[in-house]
Length: 401
Image (cartoon, rainbow, N blue to C red; front, side, top):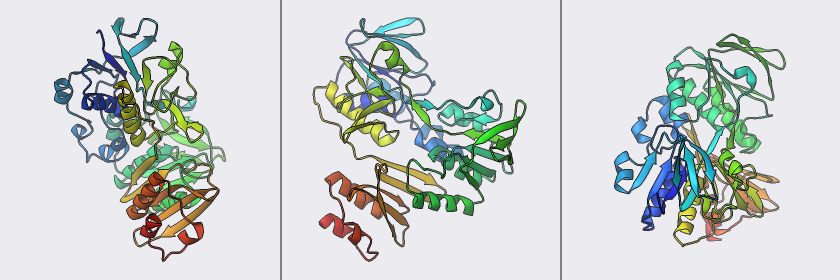
């Protein structure tokens, strides 16, 4: 297809590239390749409302099929791309080839490989796609025993849904505490107590030694030899960047497809956006696995394709719904050396400092603290630690200062 813009991937980033291209007035044919059999959809609700059965599948779709047709975006949702040929500017899929003028890699991420002891078990699941939920949800029956391997966001969100559905839930985290890489100990403790109050057992600092059972796992054996009964096992131990296509094509990668501040890869006329990318951020290279990055970086890519280059310099934000509570994070809570904890009649917030400068904020059920912090970080405003420690401080005063 001469002059086409080909997008490999069909998630939030891929959809956002296509939407922005058309909003910018791009008239070239757009072809989007996905391999799940579904038009572009949102993933965050999968482990929340969709798994709980309160969110119909139609509500997941970013736009209906008719929209893509009306905007001349060709969807190849069973078109698994096997290889990229940069010299000939083609993508290979199912024994066929398609030419492109400009290429965008929005391949996302994939679940980290399960330990071998969980492979080929009928009652072991992942949760990354609509089809994963379709496999898992029939097992969510009151009284069933669910063991969640991994105390990250996906695991804890699933644990919350399962607990509300009447399952007996145990979460096993090998690190010292749940959400260790994402939040400070104060937030981990708050989330832990919330789950325990709902009857979920949280086991931290323990590794899995073995499992017992045949085609179905019956027990999880911990490294202290405790045995945890299981009817269902959900393995949520993180994700890795889906960058193998780029690697095999000779595009630079480093824990993701390496891009600059405009989403450009090491190969001309090839861009990348979303979970699959590693990009510059304040003197280092990072990956972000969140909706904000998938949308905003994708829009920066589309702008660059259209000759409207803008440097992508995000203020990361993220949220997680568990039970009736909402955890909201803005900034990156990494490398911090100090934390100020504030409590309000709404909830709590933790303010992370690095070298005396505000770096991030995590708020639980305190939208005012989150929004104030978001505005501060977007404007480059820090805060005085001692002043912030005063419980009588009106946070609006920080913005005024």
